[in-house]
Image (cartoon, rainbow over all chains, first blue to last red; front, side, top):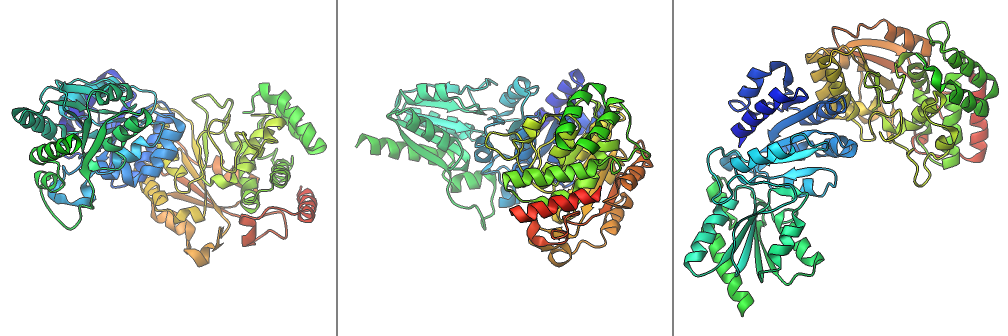
Length: 309
Length: 306
C-alpha cells in the first residue's frame, strides 16, 4: 500500500496545492514519485517525530493539508501526545500515515510492530481512523477522506500486490464491507489479516461451516449499524486482528454486542502476549499468535462446538 | 498597528481597570497609534496593568502560577504593546503568537483583555466552571492561536507556522515564548535543529530565563547553562536581553531580519515573581495562591513599579 499511497497522494497533490508531505526519514524507494514531482512540498523532517507532528499542526492551521509519514509505531506512539494536543484538540486536517500494520516488519522485531495504534487512535473522539485491508481499499479510502476537515489516521500495509478476495476495493466511511455471507458464525477482521480470514472461511466452507466475513476499514467512525446487523444474525463472532486484543476490533465488536444487548458470543483473536524475544517473519508471528488461516479454522471449529454444547 | 474598531472596548476596559494609566493607554489606542520605542508600554503602565490583573485574577480564582506569570509580564507587554501585528484574531496574515509555557496564560489573557479582544466579564471568568479561560490557554478564545500546556510542544507548532508563512510567501512572523525549564524537553531541541536547517528567519523564540522550575532551580535540576551557547550551537541567531525591559525587547526584535537568515531567539533574563518582593526567586510561588495579606502587599508593590 505504500506505493499506492505515494501514487494517490501525488495525483491528489496535482489537484490541490494544500497537500504537502512530511516524512520522519522513512519512505526511501517509496515516496520518490511525490518528492520528485513536488520537491518544494516535500520535507524530510529527520528522525524527529514529535517535531514533525508539531510542525504539521502549525502548517495545517495556516491552511495546508500535511501528510505525515512514518512507520506505525513511530507515527502513532512516539508522537501520540502531539497528535492529541495538536491536530485533534485543534481539529486540524493533519493526516497521520503509519506504515506497517501488525507484524509486517517481521524480523525487524517488536520495536517495529504496530500492535496498539488502532486502540490508541480509536479512544480519541476527534480523529478519523482508517485501516484498509489491501491496496485497492486503501486507494478508495484515501480518495474518500483526503480532504476531510478533521485529522485522519491511516494505518497502511506495506503490501502493494495482494488483495483480499471479494473486497474489490470497496470502502465507505462508517460502513463495514461484507465479503462473504453465512449463518453459522461471523468473522470480523481489520487490516491485511483479512486475507487469512477469507482463506479460513474458504476452508470452513469445505467442512460445512457457513461463515460471514466482514472487513472493518472505517474504524472511527465505527460501522456500528452494520455490526449490529451482522451480529444479530449469528450466535458466534470471531474478531481477527494483527493488533493486541484490547482496544482493536475485538474490543469494538464486544462494545457493540454489550451496548446493544445482542445475543452473540464474541471470541477475540489477536495478540495477547508481548511479542518480545522471539524473532520471526510475519507469517511466523501470525502462526505463533493464532492468526494464520489454519489457526483461525481450528478456533472457529472449537468455538462452534463449545456454543453448541 | 492597533485597529481603531477595538478602541472603544479598550477604552471602557481600561477605565474599569486603572483610571489614570488606562485612560492614557486608551487614548493611545484611540488615536490608532503605534506603540514604538518612544511610546513605551512601561511608560503607559501596560506591564503594571498586566501584573495587576495577574494578581487580581489569581487571587479571585485562588490559583497559583503567579510567579511564572509575573516573570513574563514585561515580555507579554512588549509583544502586545508594540510588536505583534494582530489587527484581527481571524486575519490569516496576522503574526502568530504561541505561549508555549502555557501555565502563564493569565498574563496573556490580561494582555488580550487590555487590547480589547474580550470584555471584562470574560476576563472575570478566569478558572470558573464553564469558562474558556483556564490556567492554560485554549485556542477557542479569540486571540489564542494554539492551545498549550504540555511543555516542549509550542515551538514545533511555531516552526510549522513559520514554514507555512514562507511557503505562502507571507511576511507574517511567528513568536513563541518558552520557559527555560521547558528546554528540558527533548522535543524542543528537535525543533531547534529543524528551524535552523530550514533557516526559518520568520520564527522568533523568546526564552523566559528565570532559572526556576516547579520543584527547584534549573541549575540544580538539569543545568541549562550556557543557555545562549546551546541555542547558538544549534544554529540560531541569539540575542540576550533584559526580560523586564519592554523597550529593550522591542528594540531587539525590531532589528531582526525576519525575511532571510537564521531563526532568532531572545534569551530574556527574568526574575521569577518579578515585582513582588516576597515572590522573587521563591520556588513556592510556582504553585502557591495568595493569602489576603500577601495579596494586599503584592498589589501595593506592583503599584509602586509604574
